[in-house]
Image (tube, rainbow, N blue to C red; front, top):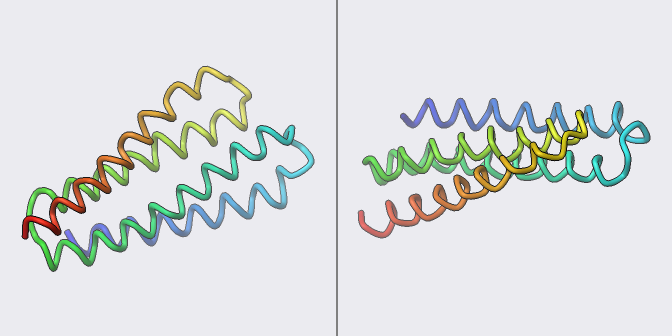
Length: 122
C-alpha cells in the first residue's frame, strides 16, 4: 500500500500542477473571476491532499492497518469529489455541481480523522 499511495500522491501532485498551470495560462481572463477562483480553490486542495497521500504512503509503513489505508482512500475520494466538482463547476458554470463539493470535503475530514486515529492507536 505504501507504493500505491506514494504513486497516487505523485500523480495527484502532477495533475494539480498541470491544472494550476492550465488555469493560469488558458483560463485567466476567459473565466469570470468568481469561477476562476473556484478553479484555483480546487487546485489548491488537490495539491494539499496529493501531499497528504505521500504522507499516507509513509504512514502505512509506520502504522499499518485498515485505518491508515482508509485515510488514503478518503483523500483520493476527496480529491475526486471536492476538486473534481470545483473544476467541473468552474468550466461549465453549472452551479448544481457545487452540491457535490461538500461530500469531498467530508472525505477530506474523514481522511484526516482516520489518519490521526491510526497514529494515536498504534
